[in-house]
Image (cartoon, rainbow, N blue to C red):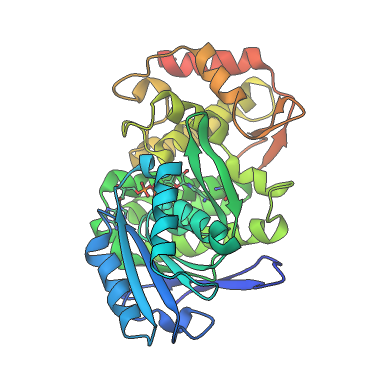
Length: 374
Ligand code: NAD
Ligand code: GLY
């Protein structure tokens, strides 16, 4: 069973492991780096993950010698990453005797992981939490690295904290019930790692991507492991996103604007927005004269072959806004420093870098072309 370590340098906990395998939900207590006996434990799930996964985790914890185990099921969807839901989770924890030695287990996708992680960061000024991600996106990205938070009316992920889990348990069996569209959304984040700095991984994905998306166990396990290793390397180098971690935002300045314009209403999943955003980042890089056209085309062809959207006009129902509105949303993104947006751009596949110096006229042209299908 592959295990990936993340050494994040937090003096209180230092290192945690990501465990990748099968049939882990009945047998993960040994992955927790301390004894659970006598503690009050909490399981946070959503309505799609509570049965059977949340309940399976709950039953496993019930026989761990814990003082008590509670489970809370929230509505599924991005709307749950809200201040109102946070208040509900904090009240639930307090009503059931949360203590400094309590542990919160998040069983769900990025929404439950981000919200639960933030609740764990702020309740009693911080308790331990364990990520048990149930989407491919969460297994390769959101459950790893300690970014937690919620959305505000002003934009996505604008409130949050860096709070690392004590363990991450990626059970590939849970992906069997994940709708294909959600699986593909996670696949976009896998491609992102390859595009940042690993051209050999991209070549591997061109050969094995279909197998990953068909959930072939070997291909899937390899893709999850390689993605977690890449993310661990970057988080270890820059936990609080002062420099290289920003590369993980490849495509995200465009993606967050597209998601906001789509009002998080389900027509555009996060990974789908990232797929379009990565294509736009490549097109911007080509138009600015930094990246060969053939690299941009190769990326677009691969994402399309996997079934991901690659242009804004593919969003259905269409976005009710123009390029100028999208650019205004991009300028509100939180990666703004000294009044300038920081874009992740590329010199080619596997050659991403940060630039604060992009030409907004070119950004507008790239967005307009993508809206018109040029
Ligand atoms: P999600 O949590 O909304 O899950 C997607 C859908 O799949 C939900 O309806 C969920 O109930 C359902 N689901 C989950 N597991 C399932 C399973 N095994 N079988 C059937 N259905 C299942 O979305 P997501 O794509 O996992 O995560 C997106 C969120 O993650 C966004 O809010 C994004 O901002 C965040 N994110 C955070 C980070 C980070 O570093 N913290 C990184 C990337 C994305
Ligand atoms: N998903 C971006 C990050 O974790 O930094």
